[in-house]
Image (tube, rainbow over all chains, first blue to last red; front, side, top):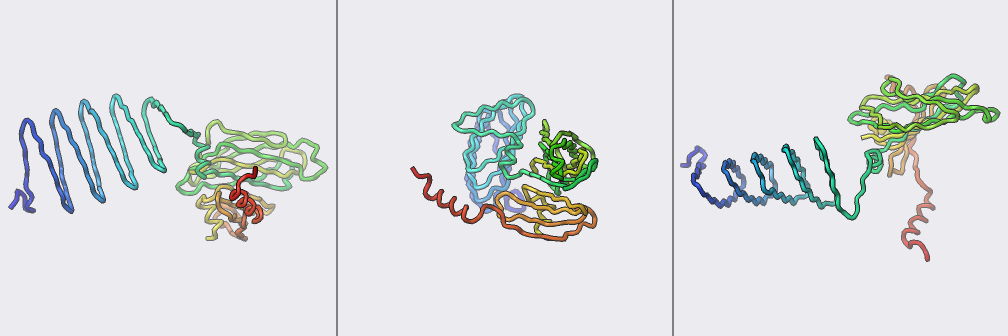
Length: 242
Length: 81
């Protein structure tokens, strides 16, 4: 009979200098370890097909060295460090890496490598196949009227980021093509007027920072014919959706 | 749900062309990068409660076969000296 009804035993060791080699082999192991000491050296080598959870909570005035080596086909590693001073060396060798780093404060990044590519978010999302290009047209629009050339509602679970839009205006009849073709482009987000600009023949506008259009919200690009004759109107919206 | 409409509402496309018609309907063409098909369909009352699909086509896109063949040949042999 053990110390507990399930025949397990309680082991309690008290001493000034303790060395306890532990070799445990079992189908199911639960090993709670609570160490409180002025000086601790803890070496762990775990070989298993599946490791459910390893919680490591270290509260110490000084931590010398934590070396973590993980070899697995898939790894999710959440690291949260709260300290007055942190030095974090990360060395990753993998065919595919997604590294998300959130830093409160000042982040200094020092990269030493033979080849590094750094992309702005917009460029990166385009490279990842997330680009969205909308183009629309309205034909034979009379003077003073407009055409909705692009109308889109962002799907559930996504956000659209718009960084540029443009329009073009052309006379419908050949006889008018030497005249001014004044047009105005209005980009609406979620049914609220957002941006307007006008030009003769068309133009483009690039936003200083992308405009976010959240899921279920819509964007509409309207082009107004301010010429004194009928025109064909086109417009485009450029962005990425993630 | 037809494939084109499904792509519209899931956002599974990279480019959209909208051709607005005088009667208020719109012809939409959707294309996703890397796919060799485009979806062209016409709807009345886009995003409206009574949105109605009146036409739907699946269109092969990309360069003609002879251009693809030449590209394959060029890749196989590389540039001549």
